[in-house]
Length: 162
Image 1 (cartoon, rainbow, N blue to C red):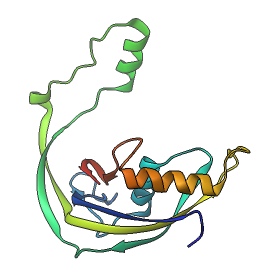
Image 2 (image 1 turned 90 degrees about the vertical axis):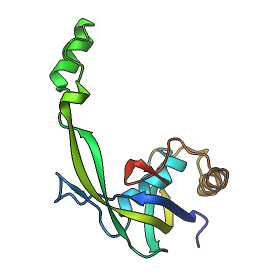
Image 3 (image 1 turned 60 degrees about the horizontal axis):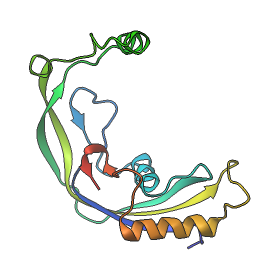
């Protein structure tokens, strides 16, 4: 494996890599998507000087689906209300009444998942003279081995941490 290549084991209780053609009720793809894998790597080590490229995703546990019902909010606060509040310092119109706006939605997600991610990175035009592949590879390995992240990596949706 090249100096800028990595392997990472990722697992969790649940995962949902939502299929775009099924918006109303979330249904997961059978396997982690490359963009979700890239998101996990970027949660551990993201810099403008590098761009992650996913080489392989290994499915290490059998694919098993489970149905989950969740409470979600049906509407969003309109962007115009947010802009108006920012200009006027008036917060009226920014609230949602959760009890009135709640709806139950079904989600078909994956249970007890484990993946092996193989990836590498390329240097971007934003790399400076102090940036080199060895430095970034070592930073990633150190952060991953210590469990350090810029933000919590997730398995498709925030409710399912990796």
